[in-house]
Length: 317
Length: 297
Ligand SMILES: [Zn+2]
Image (tube, each protein chain N blue to C red):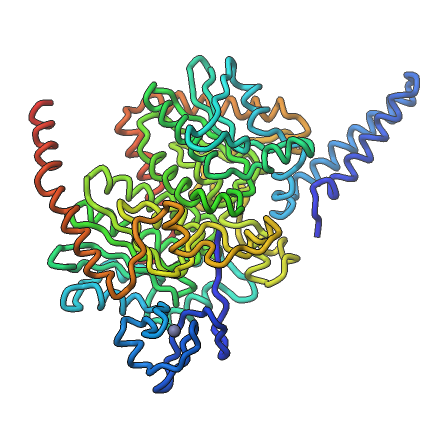
């Protein structure tokens, strides 16, 4: 069982190295022919790997250490971003970023979990696992957005809310619950996008949107495959089977009626070409915002209510 | 965070809240004293020696709380669907059948209309013995229906939680029930109808992180495990042992997450008192205010 996306991406890195090596030679017909052949091989191998990802592999891609994070997308698709800090109660939680920005010609509020790139940042961002104050900060910003009539864009990327003792003491469950309740009633458009990992309640806490999107290689699940495996198979090594059983990929969630649209990723995943991924995201968000902009406040609230109200499968009688 | 209950083994560890159903005498799971079983049962399944609260069924709860022990169940026809064709070591469909047979219920919650202290209310009571009270589509649908019915009939809603959280076997559909129920509760709140959440042992994961924490008033039974993450997960995260009483009702009261810890024997009079206050307020002021506002606009 793979533990990291880098493991099944190894053939790609090898070809890339060969290409880089070859490029160091002086230009020649022979070199260019070999380069062309290698480029072709790279594309084919990439299509082969990324065209046949298992659900578990997709989970690893969603957690890829080079994958674009919330602030990467915000920097690319928004202008004049002003980050706003703190829950005005306890502290600022770096695992959630929030603020106001311009997107496609209008002011919006932006909220998302934020992971760190290097060890220092990872610790600072707590691996993207928010504490209650993160959700309370998000709530503060979203409430402000509603007061000023700003649409809300959320970006989901977290293994889950932080399972620490302080989080429990400060009511992480309550902070998530309140977020779910309040997001249900905001009279402005809300668009939620799972950009990487959608881990359980800590992800959904900022996911109650009029539109819910997922990047092509993102995952969204009630529990991580590893934890599911530990509980149901009593052994974490069945994560691969658990991922299949949980059906946590973007196409799965579309099939289940839980996600509206899949944001396409460049061949080889968002991390191979973050700018292309960002362009795809911008296109989807702009189109959806235009659609939602036509709706009255009452319709936005009612549509969002009916959308979530219809989720689930039940046998009647 | 989802949760699944281990199948009952014949040897019961300390802390397992089930009361042994066989024999005249029983050893209390907590104080280890030998007690007459009927003495426990007559005391609302609370140990007379140490006040340990044994787990009781949803039907026993309704019997204890509803006036004359009578209620009218609704939405009992709704049952689970294995839409993921979920299979771990066992098929989800097999588990469903097994629990349906064992409990006589279709899923892990009972919804009912009843009176409590002569006040008409809507109840949703979770059943732990059905897959650890886990929340899937049916639990989500039924509690949302209960909230909508409470709003439509202007009856207070009482939800009694007893659950390990979201049901893994329904995947992300279970997760979304958190949002669905919370949205229904938001509507109820806007309608000015009281919602009382009663938390019992255990209430964890996605149930705590949605409706169980959203009561106008949150009450818990003594000593109940209440939290988001499970204690073992937290211990693994912080790499130390949690102190005694962590995530228990009294701890949550101390940290400001609960309004009261109420012994089971006091639950009905307490609920009645609270409901009298809250419904008295809804009858006079807000409805008039709404009428006045409509007259102006
Ligand atoms: Zn005892």
